[in-house]
Image 1 (cartoon, rainbow, N blue to C red):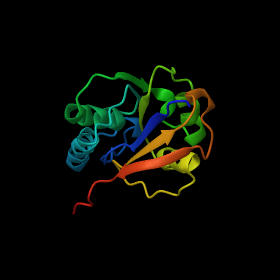
Image 2 (image 1 turned 180 degrees about the vertical axis):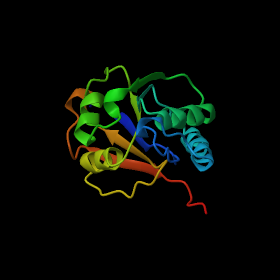
Image 3 (image 1 turned 45 degrees about the vertical axis):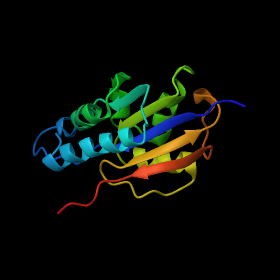
Length: 163
């Protein structure tokens, strides 16, 4: 029996607007900073640690990882990829499929609708995926053969809605 892999799908935390500026440069709001740290504490409390982080290159996703990683600890390999910025779920899945088999757990930090659609694609669910939401998906088989409907949602988290 093959060991399974774990894919952690996370939507970036709450970001502010950047009137007149590029969407790519939007920064986290204070709430987003708090939620990112809370997400890191949640993952750490469950001992869910990525070996590899695949992150959109947008400012808000990189900031989400920075705040999350301070709480999570460890030193996973990190790759900020511009291709993940405007990717759809299948584009993200294709990037994940290129992961080395030596990597057991991947954390993807990206944007909606791709993040929610990826969870749906792999698990057959239709998740509500607010900012900073996390879905932990167990996958059997190799990364390269990851197919729709082959994942099991084993845990999920979302920040409390704050006023």
